[in-house]
Amino acid sequence: MKIADILIVEDSSKKVNENKIKEVLDKINIEKLDKININRIHIPGLSDDDILGVHVIVRDVAET
Image (tube, rainbow, N blue to C red; front, side):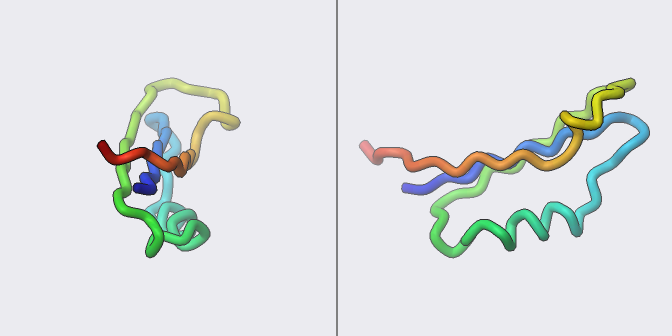
């Protein structure tokens, strides 16, 4: 089973555009995924632009 975990990190002044999320999903082959988990986290006052954005992890999970 292939699972994609998508973490969207935003602060109070910079929101991630929904088109950016769709762009990331288009880059990974979502047809071959069994499950997509999308989580949003808002960190107020975060000033580190290297952390803000969309982070994706695709992993194989053994079915038991």
